[in-house]
Amino acid sequence: MSEHLYRWRNKEIRKQVAVIDGKELPTMVLKNALYLNVFLRKWIEAIFGL
Image 1: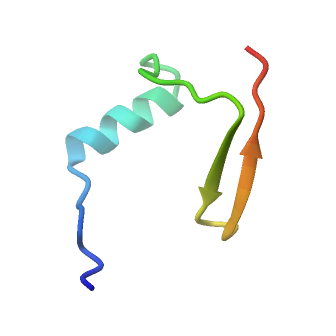
Image 2: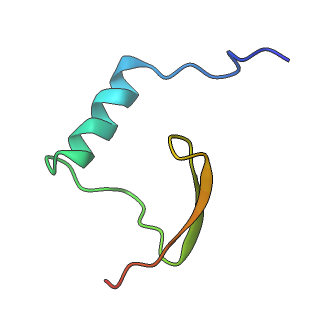
Image 3: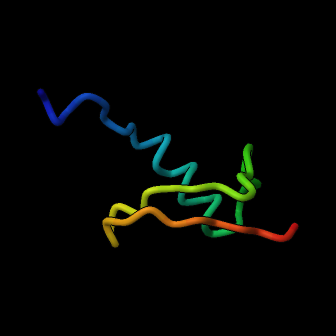
């Protein structure tokens, strides 16, 4: 199976970085989510109190 199934475009990366930097608002916020942290290589439960 090819590892290049999806390539991020520069425009998409810039938009995500702008959200992280606080320059743009996110379009979606997940609460009580279980996500895979690829750097730690483990599933993490995210519980945010908004």
